[in-house]
Figure 1 (cartoon, rainbow, N blue to C red):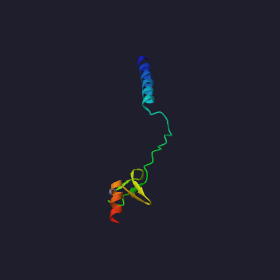
Figure 2: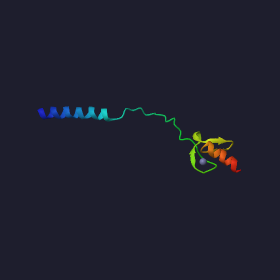
Figure 3: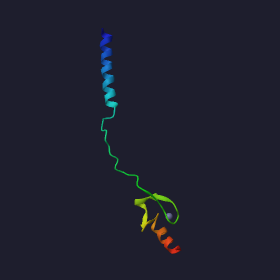
Figure 4: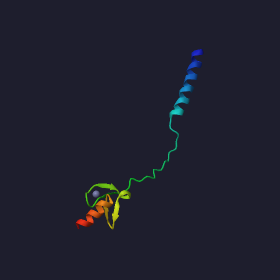
Length: 74
Ligand SMILES: [Zn+2]
């Protein structure tokens, strides 16, 4: 009879531990960080996130240097 009590106690402990380990159901975690559009530097051709690019009209550059360089070349 004692073994039965121990088994029940163990089962309760296992259930409690499992419940603790299970991640809380916070289901909806909106990831607001959009990856962002990748744009291509008009001078050297590397890709970079649009928000980090230097924009010149409808063209993008990886840096101000390349924007100026491109203007100088053309
Ligand atoms: Zn560049």
